[in-house]
Length: 168
Image (cartoon, rainbow, N blue to C red; front, side, top):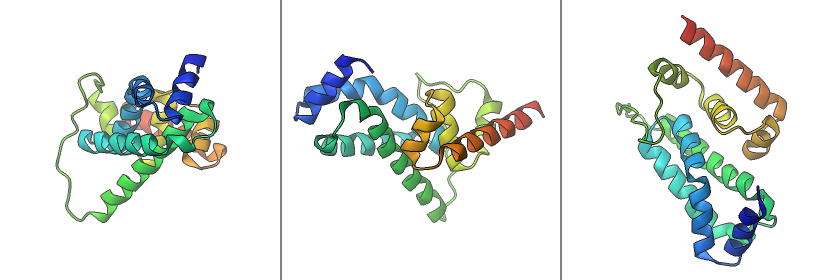
């Protein structure tokens, strides 16, 4: 991250709402893509991103290191996604809504979409953070609070499963 980004974080930590708004403009697409691939529902993805941004806005004063902003907000997002996924399992009503990706974010290959839907929630989250957003296994490990070796194993198994499903 560049110094301008760090400066925006520094200003936002001091209560500058315009600086926080500029930070949001820089990362909202990343947050939304990860949430959408993880939750497979546009409404829930938007809700989770909104909750993440609200929590980040309310607690940014507690952030100690400007350079850690991206990992910090992704950690908040990860926790919100996991909580929403637990809610899915707690609900007894079957969801019938089709996934409609946002206009900017188009999942063109229906086979890939279907294959992604078959992955376990944690595998889907880790894979989307790695492949879509380019996070390293160490970064994902830090964000999600799981061992980096476990992250690499989840990614490997998820990719293998996707290959098998798409090739068949």
